[in-house]
Length: 288
Ligand code: SAM
Image 1 (cartoon, rainbow, N blue to C red):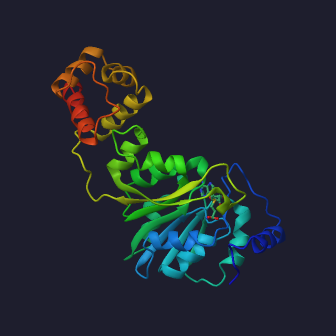
Image 2 (tube, protein in one colour):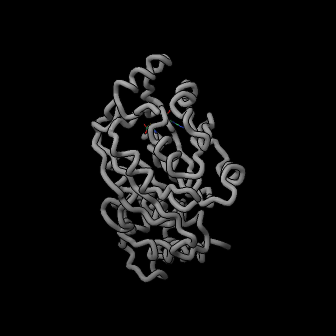
Image 3 (tube, rainbow, N blue to C red):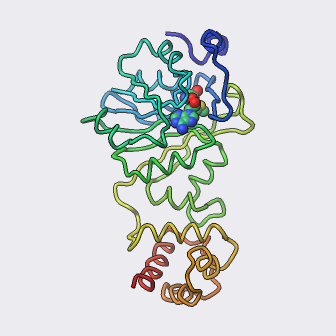
């Protein structure tokens, strides 16, 4: 088995296949040999687990996952990498590569077809240009998965793992917290990649909740409200919500009062519970 973290080995493989990096596809491949084993351990890959990987690149993380998991299914958009992966992963009979865009893949069906009887987890060094869309797609699809262990840019990790109500939190923080329990696992320096990106990264693990942590009368309305709050986070809740949800201000003010707040309250520092209560009050006043 070739050492897929060794820069000269990578260069040799890529040049033999005439491969050049695509910035547009977020192709920064891991060359720090300690990172992939740590990620594979952190995601809980073992003989009972099926792993979905997004973007295998040349297969450096895939190989570490395949050593530990029962089965690995890796989704790679770049067709040029298929012959490369064919070569680098030839030692494994428990890896399947699917040539597709992860955001257009029916993952429910994939899990049913590929991982019957297994626990399933996601592990990936995500392409940075679609970090949040991929995470939200995986969470919102309500897949039967245990966790997502993903490498993201350090700043994105800070936002995704922030406490709801804190300065670092945004609408995506609320959504991630609704679906999962998010924690940082370890930091990874920019020099761990080829080519090196401009910023450092972090590996985070999102443990998918079996039950939502708050009771919502209307999930869609809740997320519309959260989006409105964070789109104009410095404004009062009444202004940001009435503008963002196209609701009359008196209705929003009444909901805010019913939730027990003054008219000038700002919702950016609300906890998940407080946001849920407010959205349920808006629902009660607008559902007719
Ligand atoms: N896992 C490899 C590693 O750690 O060295 C490569 C990670 S690289 C940051 C991201 C990978 O995702 C690239 O191989 C890229 O081609 C692939 N990719 C980009 N967009 C994708 C998409 N929409 N669906 C699936 N794979 C994608």
